[in-house]
Length: 352
Image (cartoon, rainbow, N blue to C red; front, side, top):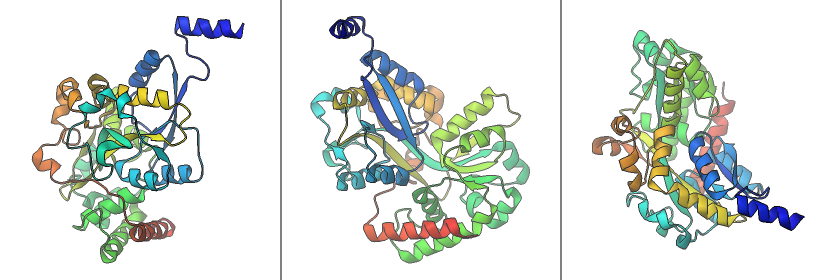
């Protein structure tokens, strides 16, 4: 009987109970429609587990979390994943769509030859805001001063959130002070920490999980977050018929731009499904669907003809040359600097 059931599953195309791909990724990174399309093609089930920051992801995997097939880290997290021996090389022979990756995003210093990773999107860390409130208050959201200047924050006390992510928040504070977000200079880090401590009493929370909803319903007026999340908040507010509009903008001091990639866990239970999934996501139309529905930028050249025309004018999704020149990718920090940042973040979180 068991053999008969297996045969029937194969004939009818019904997914077996164990035909499951486990994905560990950022929330709001892949559209549900794209996942459903892959499930239909592979006759399998995709089960996703989410994390809110690269540090959280690294901590869970370092502590021994297993059972994942595909992981979707920010590119600066790839180096520590490799150093911790948590990844296995990709089989390029099973990734026919690898050719679709733009040369700008392929074969980077982080992963020469894309041995372990393939990029699938990019997001910009920026300010999302309630357009009506910013106009009423006379706040300029195109500057990081809206997040870090106490005089401006006093107009919005308790209505501002920032990501619960040291690389992003400290990085933004470094840019606000005119430094690189990848700075290894202790004096520059100290100044950024001072900036954050002065601003923190005016913030409502460190929030990486629910700020989309909080913006959408009007509980907060401004957030430091990811461009694709702001795209979602804007869409949700429009669909709900809110009496205000959510906008998002690049900051004149510069912004972080992070490419996210798919990698395969060293002990992936289903490497076959993992390769199928990654190759599926590298297809031009599928990659474009992520941009069209999630609002992230695409490193996929074959996707560009299928990206909605209105999104091609959004700076955070399709920056022009001048805008792109002010986008800085985060890199993996050396051990000494990483310890300093971690200590600084602990100091920030416990400060009053």
